[in-house]
Length: 446
Image 1: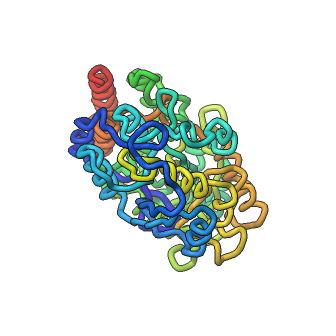
Image 2: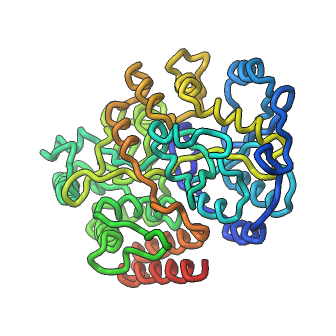
């Protein structure tokens, strides 16, 4: 979901529950669109506001877009939390904020139910782009596409191959058992006192880590109705929670990690060679952090590996950012033209630096289109792209039916309960029970 302060790397942001609560009051908000609402259908000769949590696109690209379409783009850069507050406040008050703005994967269910954004299939050929944009499924709810992913983020496993090899372990383990055994060897041989990074701080990154670990144990978090699928002791989610807490108890994870967030673990542990692996890391971290000499002591030593599962590698879960059109947009048709251009294969390839540094967008991690990722890989512009491309191709949404409207409150219970289990104030059984009960409560009231 959210970016950290590192360019191109990822960190989980927490939601402000109060904002989500206020947002629910805005259900049924109106707005305007050239496809049936009150917005202008005009495209040429207009200025649209695009509000995203990122630096502006290269001016040369925006100038070329204006020359081709007659549309001028006013770019607004806000931090992610402030951006969500603005989106919610504007929709609730039925006032204009932007013509195109952020749609995060985790808010798709909420935004779809509230009807704050126009369905993108009314403007773009979303069916036609589905094969090239595998994470489009994360932005689809009740048959409608709320936003178009403009970059790709998915959870990956990163491994310090030098440490694994020194311990006589396979540097590309395929199962959880093989992976855990390798970590124990690394610890036993003194190569790393605490070889595994798990961010146990009570923050969104802990929820994300558990989601990927749950999938690795063969489980799912919620069913299509939002009901918990992890309450039973033999479920993937229960076993994932137990494995994570046991890793801390056993000393595979440092005791201090109860207060470490995901981005802190990346920067101060994985990048500094203090740990041998992060089981649920973020795509892009090798090229943007671990292979950057100024911020890393493990340059050239860390590789992505397919996330180990019970019987073999498991699918990687998606957490990308998208862009959509609020119903208060002044120029929704012009915004749609911008989104089509912004997420096109040509522009994504340019932004990724494949066609020269003058066209590159420094804040861009990995394109959402497979064709652009493949072009990056073949041109040598994506670190370990040969590994990341198939991972992106097979990546799956965290929630098959889209994130539920009550996701923020659920995630808060997930990370606070798992943190409590890590500190010993709750047993794993009690923590999982609290998480399951909260999901049942929220699903029943939705």
